[in-house]
Image (cartoon, rainbow, N blue to C red):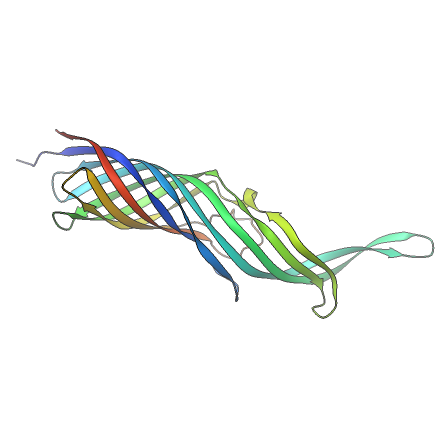
Length: 228
């Protein structure tokens, strides 16, 4: 006879700690974002050491960064003649620094399995899918255009907003562990990494994939536990 199966349901809260990660320019720096994670969870005991889990979470994923930028551009100017002003343009280069931040709010839906390593510890692994409820990628840029020794023009504290270039959907992998107490409260930590870029495919200012990589520390509170 198989052991009795159980359904567990409760609340989950904690912190996201991490940053979007991609190929960075030499000299780039940044700071990890720390934000809240709050929602509900369920667990279905399969009657062995295995269980299935699902969650529905509001999740903040942010960070700050500073990175050098450079590339080709077109400098537009007016050529003044004795009789007219003629719009002109020249192909040239630009370089400078960008200070920016991510303020992204997601609805996360993790789906994963757990294996009971001992009476108190679970190993958890699976995946997640996320929907971007509110995404912000903003900041300012200090840019010089033209020859590095004799720039045509300098732009300081020029605001930028690339929020519209963020992908609405994200998905990835999850790995973690949970400590089960003798009471209704459990503690855990997990690591998630995205499998797609947070930017749209046609975003021209980023080479390669920029993935959400975050660690979650959390507390679960079991509301209902029914034996079936």
